[in-house]
Image (cartoon, rainbow, N blue to C red; front, side, top):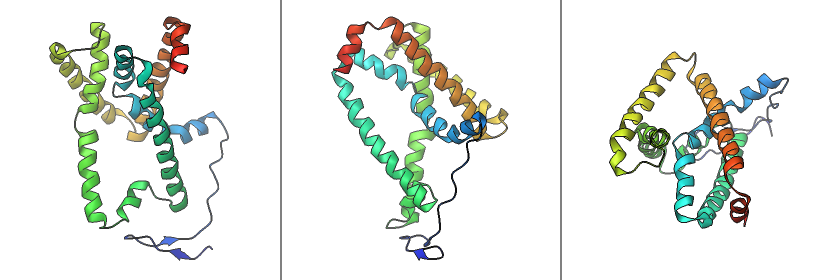
Length: 208
């Protein structure tokens, strides 16, 4: 009931209250504003060059590897649903939920900081995107001999991200626009290319 509290693990107690009203979608602009954070997350998954390097592995090793994509997508769906439910019920992101677990936020704070550094702070994503750019330049997937080209593009991509952050009005708004453009170009472009270049027999093999 409203006004009550519930134990919150190693963190402060949760206040019990009613759910807030969902945001009203009055027009297309409001809809895009609501979808903005999701677009940033989606852009993070396709912006590292996986959309090019991943399919190249299927070309090399066969469509039998699609079972990995199916299993990982299914597990990711359940994970995302549970994280969404936690945020809806508590009003806080899942990372704060982990801080409520033992042995406490002093431990989990360092764990997430170190893990986040290795995942995002290192220029691995920039080099992943650079691999895709270099592939367009070379007309093939870069190999070990193409390392200087990939590193050069990686530096350009990394510097471009820094410039993008400086010239945007707000970081979140800038990321939203950049990821909307990337989504339409990458996903739309790949769909058109697939429909134009991939024969029906290959589509059927992938479905089977």
